[in-house]
Image (cartoon, rainbow, N blue to C red; front, side, top):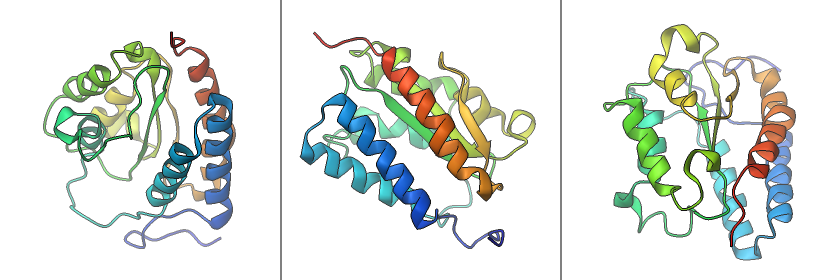
Length: 186
């Protein structure tokens, strides 16, 4: 496979998309979800992996994660966020430094507020395909990813050959372990 060039839009192969969908189906099967929610979840995952990288040159993935759970978006996100008994997986796909305006703690607090009834930090898992040098040059994103109890699973966004490894083996195992730590409902 030829490496992707900047601006081409990074989307996954049909095989990788199918592995993601199969992993989501397995998570849904294990959690006893209904068909309507399963369909929404699979549709969202397909849209997420095929979005590419068009848009503003000031990438703010940490802000996006926080505001996705913020009450200001409650109407738009109706049915997206489950609180009790549901793990929220925040997975970043970026090749640029984060330029979110507020502190990473502000966005973490938005997510934790949304997951308060579940158990807060125990109900959030963070990972991503990010720049290899994230620890040195992308401090806000790196700091955000490390504000939750479980160590984030991450891989190099430029290493397209490793996407299946990050999504398949590593992330699936980490999510399964995180799900086991979500407090039981009832």
